[in-house]
Amino acid sequence: MIKLDHINKYFGDAHVLKDINLEVKEGEKLVIIGPSGSGKSTTVRCMNFLEEPTSGHVYIDGREITGKNKTKVVRDTTSMVFQQFNLYPHMTVLKNLTLAPIKLHGKSKEQAEDLAYHYLDVVGLRDKATVYPNTLSGGQQQRIAIARALCAQSKIILFDEPTSALDPETIQEVLDVMVKLAKEENITMVVVTHEMGFARQVADRVVFMADGQIIEEGTPEHFFVNPKNDRVKKFLSKIIR
Image (cartoon, rainbow, N blue to C red; front, side, top):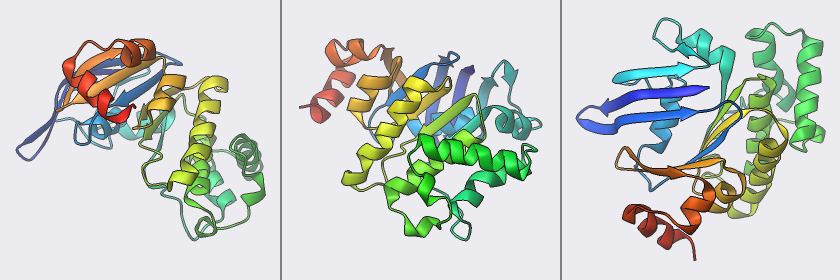
């Protein structure tokens, strides 16, 4: 479903991604972990060309993304949940959820609202349809952002540290929704996170990045019970007590 082929990314003189090769299968739940500054978010943002690789090739659902076709391929296949919620503050929750299905995907207002209410039920926030985002907690706003991504009915949802901007008491409500999606929805998920409990519970495969490279990958059991690389062992020893 996703293939990164020899991806390099420079920001000026900084070589932030170094020959990244990664494939994600249809329906797979892939979790990317690693220290800050390791290139995790840039890797995910290259998957939908929010960051254009300096060199290498990106394939989504068998199609190569190029500068010419990137809008269509990304719109057809992927949605993204960001660290910040990126909801439109001047629109109600319902308007936030129906905007893209109507404007980009050709849904009627009725179809779009049916989708919105369905996914508001999925994230447990149907009663917030008519309110504005700034009346909601951070956790609620992120759950709305997840519902918005689901409304696009994409095959792939990318999550870029979706709990990093949240207060500790609201993190779990977002993680609970993501666990539910992973277990019940037939979508491909790529999640950048520091939440090791989530990675252990949900991931089909875990990728560890450091210094712009993929250092190790394997099942959660492999990672959290018997990692091979010393850099991975050191990282896990600091965050898992």
